[in-house]
Amino acid sequence: MLSEVQIMCMASDLRQELGLAEADIAAVIGDAGYTYIEKTLPEDVSGFSMYLGSGRYAIGFNPAHCWSKGFRRFTIAHELAHVTIPAHRALLQATEIHQSQPEFRSRDNDLEREADRFAVHFLTPAHAFREQARFKEYCPDTILGLARHFGTSVYATALRYVELTDQSCALFVCNSTGKILYEKRSGPMLDEYRQMRLLNREAVRPGTLVHDWIKGNQSEQQCRLGLEDWYDDCPEGIEATETVIALGYGSQYFSLLIPDEQQVHEEDEW
Image (tube, rainbow, N blue to C red; front, side, top):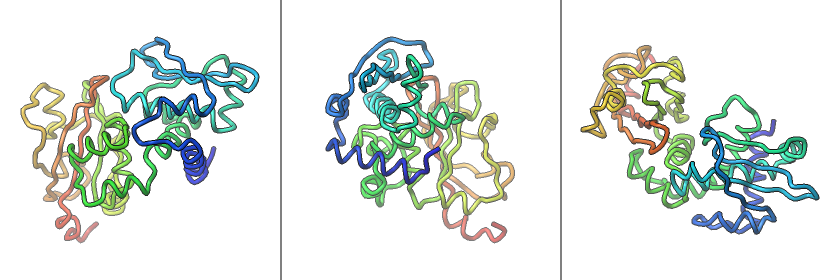
């Protein structure tokens, strides 16, 4: 499996070679010498890539999954990774077609994780993203604004923000059955809350705002709560702000969680 630095360098090199503008990826496929195809595929497939022979490759998108322009861009960039990274090319040459699930759904597969990381670096280079996010708080307006600027999905943008910020914060992706599909914490939050277990695949706890949304009570988008309402293994008395955003597809929700910074640093036992 490639290192993060190797993936970043490959994505950066291709981006510079193609002269990618933040608002445009449609022309990239042709400029890179690939064929672009749109084809309706099964419900759990968003994109695909395939070897056409004689050194030619095709990148495809499932139009039934055109949930947003940003989602489409991320899917295409993900498939661009499959036809760019040598090991992925070798796989394509050995199979008739490679199909990919919607963004960030195939974390147990090394090739899919590499393609996701390639797409992240290709569409949102760290330096450019940090410059745009500088002095902006972790909130829906910031995430939506960055998504518009980079032409990326809300999902990919929120994950990138949490990945690069120096703010203590967390992101949860939850489905309509009340399960936490994915949790990502920023570096500072990981450092400050080393003892708290990750909540991936656990049930959303009553008392959280996203639990209310899942139950149909969506009158508020933001609320104050205790950090222990999310994490039962953290000290009591640390307040936090939770904001919920509907993902827009797949009956999924984002929960953005920000502990109060002052209380975090006053908590001696952490």
